[in-house]
Image (cartoon, rainbow, N blue to C red):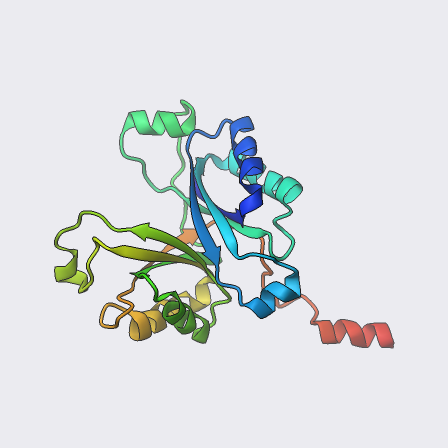
Length: 233
């Protein structure tokens, strides 16, 4: 089973809800967020707004594959500016009833091997400090991120451990990165926007089994300059 996060343009929410309903996916949560793309990038890709919808679902392997296919077919997620989709494998589920609900009554669940090419970095920072987190992340090689506004609750002793107060407005920054640069990104964010700074960011990561919706670096892919040279020769 996978914990699936879709980051899409706001006008695609009704389409995605329809897809999830048709696939009989049991859990669908939607949140409001915004992209971190600069105005220059938005102008380049023809993106009018950086407002996003984050849709969280849980799906088995087959439904995850179908969900990815529908994202491409109906939400054009493989084109720049239309969002991303990531699937994080679920290692364990609390309680048989919960498992039955999420799996549709299936009793078999394979424990995944956590050896994937990408990871999801989650940074939780004080409100208004997204730029500090993203500046640090980009310095270490991150391409971009998505911001979710949230309010922390409970965890009365969190300030004792993290030197940040949970019971205040927060910003959750989601960054997908290749595993080779994940540690560097997290280290730089902690150094420049961590608990000892005004940003007060805490950071952790999750393995990602599938990634769609943004360009993946490929050593075997020819660069644009190489392609132009071949076209001119």
